[in-house]
Image (tube, rainbow, N blue to C red; front, side, top):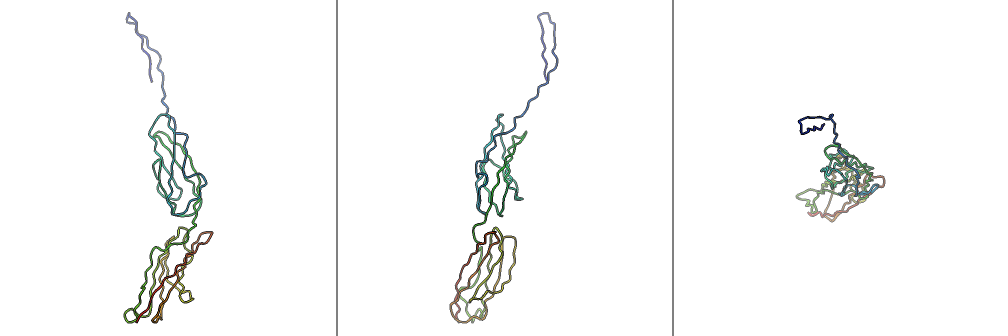
Length: 212
């Protein structure tokens, strides 16, 4: 609020009415997510750079908040990097604040899984000694896929062996035993199948020797 006071040479004072002044903040505007583009198709697990711009006529310092709509914590910064660890359609919401007010914009992204499952660990003896190790080969392997794994098998000598498996979301860990081995050279094949709408299979063959 303010008012004017006027005084003449004779000392007479006159005071104006009180006037109210409202200082308004101008909201950030012209928000634009410059990368990636709306409707872009991303690969699950791959890091993607997110860039944005905004305008503030008051020249206030702007803070950028990113919500990726996948139950993760908010990211901050005009530019940030993020990787989706699941498949589906995601609405990415950008909130730009000048500490007094904020504005929103968003884009929709499609996250696919076009890659087969991967092996994160594999343990077995490439050289099995019958006298020392016995005639059974133990195989342990862990496989990972962002759209989860639907099947994980070991094939030996044309037969799919039963294994003992545990799973935690996108990861499976399995154990198999190949028994009754004699001296010779052998191989087994691990097959991993994902759970995406378009199935991807990874088949890898491994070799081992059995000696006396």
